Length: 311
Ligand code: APR
Image 1 (cartoon, rainbow, N blue to C red):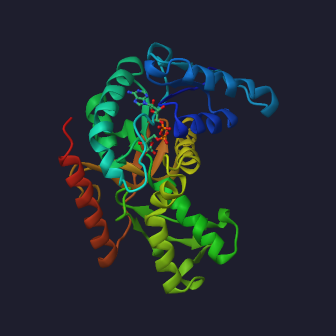
Image 2: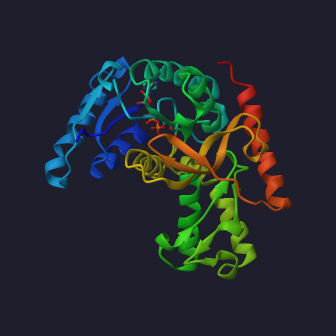
Protein backbone atom coordinates (compact mmCIF):
# COMPACT_ATOMS: atom_id res chain seq x y z
CA UNK A 1 0.00 0.00 0.00
CA UNK A 2 1.25 3.47 -0.86
CA UNK A 3 2.13 5.55 2.18
CA UNK A 4 0.29 8.82 2.58
CA UNK A 5 2.28 11.97 1.85
CA UNK A 6 2.24 14.97 4.14
CA UNK A 7 3.95 18.24 3.33
CA UNK A 8 4.57 20.86 5.97
CA UNK A 9 5.26 24.36 4.70
CA UNK A 10 7.21 26.34 7.27
CA UNK A 11 9.84 24.22 9.03
CA UNK A 12 9.97 26.41 12.14
CA UNK A 13 8.79 25.53 15.62
CA UNK A 14 5.24 24.42 14.79
CA UNK A 15 6.19 22.79 11.48
CA UNK A 16 9.12 20.78 12.81
CA UNK A 17 7.20 19.69 15.90
CA UNK A 18 4.25 18.60 13.77
CA UNK A 19 6.67 16.59 11.60
CA UNK A 20 7.98 14.91 14.74
CA UNK A 21 4.54 13.82 15.94
CA UNK A 22 3.24 12.88 12.49
CA UNK A 23 6.33 10.73 11.90
CA UNK A 24 6.14 9.01 15.26
CA UNK A 25 2.50 8.12 14.53
CA UNK A 26 3.55 6.78 11.12
CA UNK A 27 0.98 8.94 9.36
CA UNK A 28 3.00 8.95 6.15
CA UNK A 29 6.09 10.28 4.40
CA UNK A 30 6.85 13.88 5.26
CA UNK A 31 8.32 16.77 3.29
CA UNK A 32 9.38 19.84 5.28
CA UNK A 33 9.57 23.03 3.21
CA UNK A 34 10.96 26.45 4.06
CA UNK A 35 12.26 29.48 2.18
CA UNK A 36 15.48 29.44 0.07
CA UNK A 37 17.03 31.99 2.46
CA UNK A 38 17.32 29.20 5.05
CA UNK A 39 18.60 26.58 2.57
CA UNK A 40 19.77 23.53 4.52
CA UNK A 41 17.54 24.14 7.55
CA UNK A 42 14.51 22.07 6.47
CA UNK A 43 16.84 19.42 5.02
CA UNK A 44 18.85 19.30 8.26
CA UNK A 45 15.79 19.01 10.49
CA UNK A 46 14.31 16.33 8.23
CA UNK A 47 17.54 14.29 8.23
CA UNK A 48 17.88 14.58 12.00
CA UNK A 49 14.28 13.45 12.52
CA UNK A 50 14.73 10.59 10.04
CA UNK A 51 17.79 9.42 11.97
CA UNK A 52 15.64 9.10 15.11
CA UNK A 53 13.38 6.60 13.35
CA UNK A 54 15.40 3.42 14.07
CA UNK A 55 15.46 4.32 17.76
CA UNK A 56 11.81 5.33 17.96
CA UNK A 57 10.73 2.53 15.65
CA UNK A 58 8.76 4.37 13.00
CA UNK A 59 8.91 3.95 9.23
CA UNK A 60 8.58 7.19 7.32
CA UNK A 61 10.67 9.00 4.74
CA UNK A 62 11.35 12.52 5.93
CA UNK A 63 12.93 15.02 3.58
CA UNK A 64 13.47 18.76 3.49
CA UNK A 65 13.29 21.23 0.60
CA UNK A 66 13.15 24.88 -0.34
CA UNK A 67 11.11 24.28 -3.49
CA UNK A 68 7.70 22.74 -4.04
CA UNK A 69 8.53 19.98 -6.53
CA UNK A 70 9.28 17.45 -3.78
CA UNK A 71 5.81 18.10 -2.27
CA UNK A 72 4.00 17.00 -5.46
CA UNK A 73 0.99 14.77 -4.94
CA UNK A 74 0.65 15.36 -1.19
CA UNK A 75 -2.49 14.10 0.52
CA UNK A 76 -2.35 16.68 3.29
CA UNK A 77 -0.46 19.96 3.32
CA UNK A 78 0.02 21.78 6.60
CA UNK A 79 0.74 25.51 6.32
CA UNK A 80 2.68 26.95 9.25
CA UNK A 81 4.66 29.44 7.18
CA UNK A 82 4.77 32.97 8.48
CA UNK A 83 5.94 34.88 11.48
CA UNK A 84 4.97 34.12 15.04
CA UNK A 85 3.95 36.81 17.50
CA UNK A 86 6.15 38.40 20.14
CA UNK A 87 5.09 39.71 23.57
CA UNK A 88 2.59 42.57 23.28
CA UNK A 89 1.41 41.47 19.83
CA UNK A 90 -2.03 40.05 19.13
CA UNK A 91 -2.57 37.37 16.50
CA UNK A 92 -4.21 40.07 14.37
CA UNK A 93 -0.99 42.11 14.31
CA UNK A 94 0.53 39.45 12.01
CA UNK A 95 -2.06 39.95 9.30
CA UNK A 96 -0.17 41.95 6.69
CA UNK A 97 3.00 39.94 6.60
CA UNK A 98 1.35 36.54 6.90
CA UNK A 99 -1.27 37.27 4.22
CA UNK A 100 1.44 37.64 1.55
CA UNK A 101 3.22 34.51 2.77
CA UNK A 102 0.12 32.29 3.00
CA UNK A 103 -1.13 33.47 -0.40
CA UNK A 104 2.12 32.57 -2.12
CA UNK A 105 2.34 29.25 -0.27
CA UNK A 106 -1.25 28.24 -1.10
CA UNK A 107 -0.76 29.04 -4.79
CA UNK A 108 2.32 26.82 -4.91
CA UNK A 109 0.63 24.04 -2.99
CA UNK A 110 -2.39 24.06 -5.32
CA UNK A 111 -0.08 23.81 -8.34
CA UNK A 112 1.82 20.78 -7.04
CA UNK A 113 -0.82 18.98 -4.94
CA UNK A 114 -4.18 19.77 -6.54
CA UNK A 115 -5.98 17.05 -4.58
CA UNK A 116 -4.59 17.78 -1.13
CA UNK A 117 -6.48 18.77 1.99
CA UNK A 118 -4.96 21.99 3.34
CA UNK A 119 -4.64 22.53 7.08
CA UNK A 120 -3.79 26.13 7.90
CA UNK A 121 -2.06 26.98 11.16
CA UNK A 122 -0.56 30.42 10.44
CA UNK A 123 -2.11 33.33 12.34
CA UNK A 124 -4.36 35.23 12.47
CA UNK A 125 -5.91 31.86 11.79
CA UNK A 126 -9.45 32.71 10.72
CA UNK A 127 -8.17 35.19 8.13
CA UNK A 128 -5.26 33.02 6.95
CA UNK A 129 -7.50 30.05 6.24
CA UNK A 130 -9.69 32.35 4.13
CA UNK A 131 -6.59 33.58 2.23
CA UNK A 132 -5.44 29.99 1.64
CA UNK A 133 -8.90 29.04 0.34
CA UNK A 134 -9.01 31.96 -2.09
CA UNK A 135 -5.41 31.55 -3.26
CA UNK A 136 -5.61 27.77 -3.71
CA UNK A 137 -8.95 27.78 -5.54
CA UNK A 138 -9.74 24.55 -3.66
CA UNK A 139 -13.28 23.57 -2.73
CA UNK A 140 -13.99 24.88 0.77
CA UNK A 141 -14.23 21.40 2.29
CA UNK A 142 -10.56 20.79 1.42
CA UNK A 143 -9.36 23.84 3.36
CA UNK A 144 -9.54 23.87 7.13
CA UNK A 145 -7.95 25.84 9.93
CA UNK A 146 -6.46 24.53 13.15
CA UNK A 147 -7.67 26.38 16.23
CA UNK A 148 -10.49 24.61 18.06
CA UNK A 149 -8.53 21.44 18.86
CA UNK A 150 -5.80 23.58 20.43
CA UNK A 151 -8.19 25.84 22.31
CA UNK A 152 -10.14 22.82 23.57
CA UNK A 153 -6.87 21.12 24.59
CA UNK A 154 -5.90 24.14 26.69
CA UNK A 155 -9.35 24.21 28.26
CA UNK A 156 -9.27 20.45 28.93
CA UNK A 157 -5.79 20.62 30.48
CA UNK A 158 -6.75 23.45 32.85
CA UNK A 159 -10.00 21.71 33.81
CA UNK A 160 -8.31 18.36 34.45
CA UNK A 161 -5.76 20.07 36.72
CA UNK A 162 -8.58 21.83 38.58
CA UNK A 163 -10.69 18.70 39.01
CA UNK A 164 -7.69 16.46 39.70
CA UNK A 165 -8.64 13.94 37.01
CA UNK A 166 -7.10 12.54 33.83
CA UNK A 167 -6.97 14.91 30.87
CA UNK A 168 -8.30 12.01 28.80
CA UNK A 169 -11.63 12.16 30.62
CA UNK A 170 -12.27 15.85 29.96
CA UNK A 171 -14.08 16.67 26.73
CA UNK A 172 -14.78 20.21 25.66
CA UNK A 173 -16.14 22.17 22.74
CA UNK A 174 -15.29 25.71 21.69
CA UNK A 175 -16.79 27.69 18.85
CA UNK A 176 -15.98 30.91 17.02
CA UNK A 177 -12.71 32.53 16.05
CA UNK A 178 -9.23 31.78 17.39
CA UNK A 179 -9.08 34.96 19.40
CA UNK A 180 -9.84 36.41 22.78
CA UNK A 181 -13.56 36.17 22.04
CA UNK A 182 -13.58 32.42 21.31
CA UNK A 183 -16.64 30.73 22.79
CA UNK A 184 -15.97 27.93 25.30
CA UNK A 185 -19.24 26.05 25.73
CA UNK A 186 -19.57 24.95 29.34
CA UNK A 187 -22.83 23.13 28.63
CA UNK A 188 -20.93 20.89 26.22
CA UNK A 189 -17.97 20.30 28.51
CA UNK A 190 -17.79 17.09 30.55
CA UNK A 191 -15.38 15.18 32.78
CA UNK A 192 -16.09 11.45 32.71
CA UNK A 193 -19.55 12.22 31.30
CA UNK A 194 -20.35 14.64 34.18
CA UNK A 195 -21.04 18.28 33.28
CA UNK A 196 -18.11 20.36 34.58
CA UNK A 197 -20.57 22.77 36.20
CA UNK A 198 -21.17 19.99 38.77
CA UNK A 199 -17.47 19.62 39.50
CA UNK A 200 -16.02 23.14 39.42
CA UNK A 201 -17.36 26.32 41.07
CA UNK A 202 -18.79 29.02 38.78
CA UNK A 203 -16.03 31.43 39.82
CA UNK A 204 -13.22 28.97 39.02
CA UNK A 205 -14.91 28.07 35.74
CA UNK A 206 -14.95 31.73 34.78
CA UNK A 207 -11.25 32.05 35.63
CA UNK A 208 -10.43 28.93 33.59
CA UNK A 209 -12.40 30.23 30.59
CA UNK A 210 -10.47 33.49 30.82
CA UNK A 211 -7.13 31.68 31.01
CA UNK A 212 -8.09 29.52 28.01
CA UNK A 213 -9.00 32.59 25.95
CA UNK A 214 -5.56 34.08 26.57
CA UNK A 215 -3.79 30.70 26.53
CA UNK A 216 -1.63 31.65 23.55
CA UNK A 217 -0.70 35.07 24.99
CA UNK A 218 0.32 33.46 28.29
CA UNK A 219 2.89 31.34 26.46
CA UNK A 220 4.09 34.21 24.27
CA UNK A 221 4.75 36.28 27.41
CA UNK A 222 6.73 33.41 28.95
CA UNK A 223 8.75 32.51 25.84
CA UNK A 224 9.36 36.14 24.81
CA UNK A 225 10.86 35.17 21.44
CA UNK A 226 7.97 33.35 19.77
CA UNK A 227 4.68 31.60 20.35
CA UNK A 228 3.41 28.19 21.43
CA UNK A 229 4.30 25.18 19.33
CA UNK A 230 3.98 21.84 21.13
CA UNK A 231 0.21 22.03 21.63
CA UNK A 232 -0.49 23.73 18.25
CA UNK A 233 1.55 21.03 16.49
CA UNK A 234 -0.15 18.24 18.40
CA UNK A 235 -3.59 19.65 17.54
CA UNK A 236 -2.60 19.86 13.88
CA UNK A 237 -1.43 16.26 13.87
CA UNK A 238 -4.73 15.10 15.42
CA UNK A 239 -6.53 16.70 12.46
CA UNK A 240 -4.02 15.23 10.00
CA UNK A 241 -4.52 11.77 11.47
CA UNK A 242 -8.30 11.98 11.19
CA UNK A 243 -7.95 12.94 7.51
CA UNK A 244 -5.21 10.46 6.53
CA UNK A 245 -6.78 7.51 8.36
CA UNK A 246 -10.33 8.59 7.51
CA UNK A 247 -11.21 8.34 11.20
CA UNK A 248 -14.06 10.84 10.85
CA UNK A 249 -13.35 12.34 14.25
CA UNK A 250 -15.55 15.19 15.40
CA UNK A 251 -13.12 18.04 16.00
CA UNK A 252 -13.63 21.77 16.35
CA UNK A 253 -12.00 23.30 13.28
CA UNK A 254 -12.13 26.57 11.38
CA UNK A 255 -14.42 25.44 8.53
CA UNK A 256 -16.19 27.36 5.80
CA UNK A 257 -19.70 28.17 7.00
CA UNK A 258 -22.23 29.76 4.73
CA UNK A 259 -25.75 28.79 5.77
CA UNK A 260 -24.33 26.81 8.69
CA UNK A 261 -24.84 28.78 11.90
CA UNK A 262 -25.96 31.68 9.64
CA UNK A 263 -22.33 32.75 9.21
CA UNK A 264 -22.57 33.82 5.57
CA UNK A 265 -19.32 32.71 3.96
CA UNK A 266 -16.46 32.79 6.47
CA UNK A 267 -14.22 30.25 8.20
CA UNK A 268 -15.08 29.98 11.88
CA UNK A 269 -14.60 27.37 14.55
CA UNK A 270 -17.37 24.76 14.51
CA UNK A 271 -17.57 21.01 15.19
CA UNK A 272 -16.67 19.11 12.02
CA UNK A 273 -16.33 15.51 10.89
CA UNK A 274 -12.82 15.23 9.40
CA UNK A 275 -12.08 12.44 6.90
CA UNK A 276 -10.23 11.86 3.63
CA UNK A 277 -12.46 14.37 1.86
CA UNK A 278 -11.53 17.06 4.38
CA UNK A 279 -14.44 18.68 6.22
CA UNK A 280 -17.06 16.02 5.48
CA UNK A 281 -19.75 17.49 7.70
CA UNK A 282 -20.34 20.55 9.84
CA UNK A 283 -22.42 19.76 12.89
CA UNK A 284 -24.85 22.45 13.99
CA UNK A 285 -25.50 22.32 17.71
CA UNK A 286 -28.15 24.04 19.78
CA UNK A 287 -27.05 27.31 21.33
CA UNK A 288 -28.85 29.24 24.04
CA UNK A 289 -29.25 33.03 23.87
CA UNK A 290 -26.03 33.91 25.65
CA UNK A 291 -23.98 31.37 23.66
CA UNK A 292 -25.49 32.68 20.42
CA UNK A 293 -24.61 36.23 21.41
CA UNK A 294 -20.99 35.31 22.19
CA UNK A 295 -20.76 33.36 18.91
CA UNK A 296 -22.10 36.36 16.97
CA UNK A 297 -19.51 38.66 18.53
CA UNK A 298 -16.75 36.22 17.67
CA UNK A 299 -17.96 35.81 14.07
CA UNK A 300 -18.17 39.60 13.70
CA UNK A 301 -14.53 39.83 14.72
CA UNK A 302 -13.61 37.21 12.10
CA UNK A 303 -15.59 39.11 9.44
CA UNK A 304 -13.87 42.41 10.30
CA UNK A 305 -10.51 40.70 10.15
CA UNK A 306 -11.17 39.08 6.78
CA UNK A 307 -12.50 42.34 5.35
CA UNK A 308 -9.22 44.03 6.29
CA UNK A 309 -7.22 41.48 4.29
CA UNK A 310 -5.91 42.55 0.91
CA UNK A 311 -5.56 39.31 -1.00
N1 APR B 1 7.42 29.69 2.62
C1 APR B 1 7.81 28.73 3.46
N2 APR B 1 8.18 29.00 4.73
C2 APR B 1 8.13 30.25 5.15
C3 APR B 1 7.71 31.32 4.31
C4 APR B 1 7.36 30.99 2.97
N3 APR B 1 6.95 31.92 2.12
N4 APR B 1 7.78 32.47 5.03
C5 APR B 1 8.22 32.14 6.27
N5 APR B 1 8.43 30.80 6.34
C6 APR B 1 8.96 30.01 7.45
C7 APR B 1 10.03 30.72 8.26
O1 APR B 1 11.28 30.74 7.58
C8 APR B 1 10.05 29.89 9.54
O2 APR B 1 10.97 28.83 9.47
O3 APR B 1 7.94 29.75 8.42
C9 APR B 1 8.62 29.33 9.59
C10 APR B 1 7.83 29.80 10.79
O4 APR B 1 8.42 29.24 11.91
P1 APR B 1 8.57 30.01 13.31
O5 APR B 1 9.10 31.38 13.09
O6 APR B 1 9.31 29.10 14.23
O7 APR B 1 7.05 30.21 13.80
P2 APR B 1 6.11 29.09 14.45
O8 APR B 1 6.19 29.20 15.93
O9 APR B 1 6.34 27.78 13.81
O10 APR B 1 4.67 29.66 14.02
C11 APR B 1 4.27 29.63 12.66
O11 APR B 1 1.97 29.27 13.21
O12 APR B 1 0.91 29.22 15.28
C12 APR B 1 1.20 29.99 14.14
O13 APR B 1 1.21 32.29 14.96
C13 APR B 1 2.01 31.23 14.47
O14 APR B 1 1.77 32.29 12.33
C14 APR B 1 2.65 31.55 13.16
C15 APR B 1 2.85 30.16 12.54
